[in-house]
Length: 106
Image (tube, rainbow, N blue to C red; front, side, top):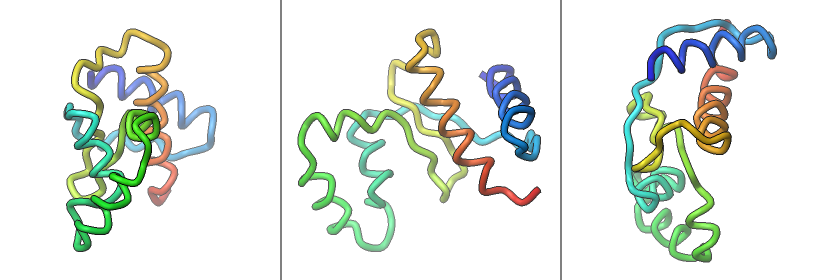
């Protein structure tokens, strides 16, 4: 996984004028429900508001959140079962890296 992240960071840096920061985030896997709760801040101060926002989403919207970057732990959270072999899986991890590294000073 580290080799894949390094290659993606190099590509993002070359194609989007981003700093090539190789301080790689951690990667972990979680159930889609946990990924959505992280996305809506359920582990922050206002857990009830985040849980209500998640509950208000339709089932399709809940499933559409396929990955997230957790700022608290500097971790990309991918869905359990992610293997990185389909274009959609690679795209979700690439997007997380892009949104992470475009905010870094450089």
